[in-house]
Image (cartoon, rainbow, N blue to C red):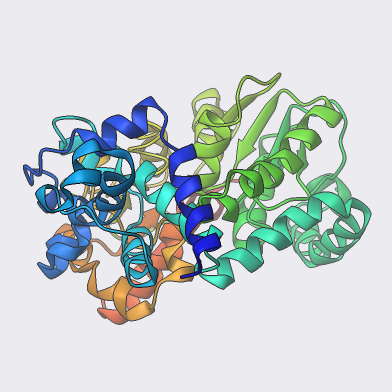
Length: 416
């Protein structure tokens, strides 16, 4: 590892040490309470994948550079010099962890492992050791905000088929009315994943509810956050915040994407608009009678996976359940659920950055949890979770239908 690279990486670590991060680094008692909270450890029994072991990889570098004891007697607290070999340990810290924060709920000191992983990821990015597919996607997303006209023309072509499909469902309405763009003063700006599975159910439900809405030109997912790079993260979310403010819209609705919602709800600072998940909005529509649903359409037992970022990190638990109960009387809970639900194993960018074999191996506890429900349909409110759960369904031959909650609502929708 070149001295200049080492200096840059250690400088980044030093610059990240605010009061909270110092507390996380200094206060771990190695009590091990968090170990069994991790789905990866619970699935494999490998202590390397526990929260304390991952954090210790970074903490030992911290001790060497920011602890008096670590500088004069490094053997007392296992302090290490940062080198190329240890950067591999930093990679293990960052990209074997989904950032689900289940460990944090058990930690007596409230140490936020996700924040430790964010520093590890930023160090890897500075050393040019991050997963390149994530970097490529992050830079592509940021570029869309800088080439607006090109992005808009491309997106309009991409949604043409969805518009035409929905025009057949709502005769008498133009495709542009059903999937509107650039609607100034609309009640809602909906940010999708820029894919059919995200746009089509939402457009169908919004049209049925007579929502005055506009579809964002940008996808919700923020790959900068998966890389732990604040500059890229900000460039990606500012495309959306600028769009909301330019259109004069008061409610920003985020599709079923956990990290996107957590970031836009809690990390962008005070804005002139509110941020809700699509299921919070649809739950409101159901209660107000703006959406009518037929419970006979969805057949079989339905269970729900709480996405870590929507649930544990953002507190949205009941609205998805209300939506599910509106389409079926055969809802069965996973156990544990809500705050204590097991992570699916695909979050934190791992569904893109990690090897499939690793994701499957470290999610066995999730598979056991799903099997215990006896469900026929497995639904969730996050597209990253959806992708991981589909892979688990195939790998472990669970023979389930895997669905987003919005898909079930759109399927059971009664059209006037």
